[in-house]
Amino acid sequence: DIQMTQSPSSLSASVGDRVTITCRASQSISSYLNWYQQKPGRAPKLLIYATSNLQSGVPSRFSGSGSGTDFTLTINSLQPEDFAIYYCQRSYSTRALTFGGGTKVEIK
Amino acid sequence: EVQLVESGGGLVQPGGSLRLSCEASGFTFSSYWMSWVRQAPGKGLEWVANINQEGNEKYFVDSVKGRFTISRDNAKKSLYLQMNSLRAEDSAIYYCARVNAGSYSSYYYYMDVWGKGTTVTVSS
Image (cartoon, rainbow over all chains, first blue to last red; front, side, top):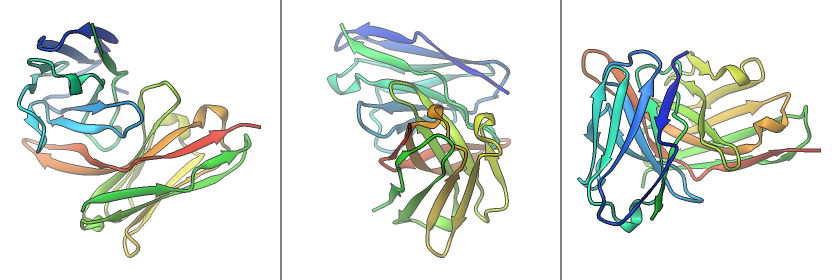
């Protein structure tokens, strides 16, 4: 099974900062990676699919990149509403839509 | 409005069974793969199971294989998760999610609609 590893597991940042979260797959998943945001007590929300496609309604300060085994979620100019947990997910096959362990973005 | 509403969660003893339901509205349910995703208290997201549009292709995470069954009723626009031989480690919020798809050189999948979840607690 392909494992998804996110780093860091948590980070502290200030409003206006640029934040980068990394997701690494244990083997190549081509360009098929999704990113989700989850706030406390809420269901996850899709941010980016297939590595770099912004879901409708998601602010353009969110962007994704990568291929193969290494992927990145970038948040430009962090806003107060962006403090949350972010998860990556392999999206290549419906046999296993595995999530990464999550990255908590906290206020510095 | 596109919506998924889960139900059926509750408190069950170890070894017991529970059936979760997810009712869809606002979209053509029969056109989509569907998923169950769970989240144990204070933990991350864990994909549990997928089912295709016709209900004849199903996949499960290893930890629930042989204990959980996923099914759907397209006429009722409903998704189900039958959970048997429940263990304490199955305690979690269970989310129903719609699986959308696209393609480049091959297909990719993403969960674009989520329910609010239903809580399952396995405890004596």
